Image: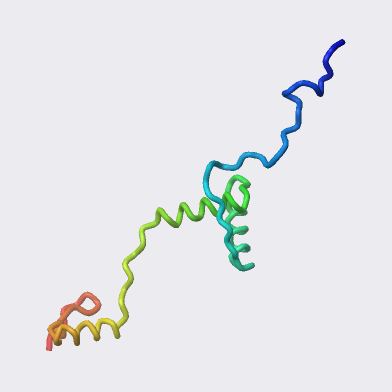
Amino acid sequence: MTKSVRDSKKSKPKIGRPKTTGPGQPQVVRMHDQQIAEIDSWIASQEAEISRPEAIRRLVELGLTVKARPKQGSRAQADKADAMAGGANRQGKRHGLLLTQ
């Protein structure tokens, strides 16, 4: 008697969840509708169609590779620093020009 095609190990349907992208840890993040819409529009602008989780992974990777610009302090912070320095910077640079009295 010959074996049925269904008896073959190769044709058995796999049970369970399919493999994911790797051994990473799952993260549950709550996002607002506007954020999801912006992610979906970013997905639409890509050449290849990708899933939302893959898009979020790519956006996080992009965000982590960008170098942050140093924050520019406000005028109030500059005045406070000047006062703490005892007014030594009153003839300092402002807008790239040296001020004189």
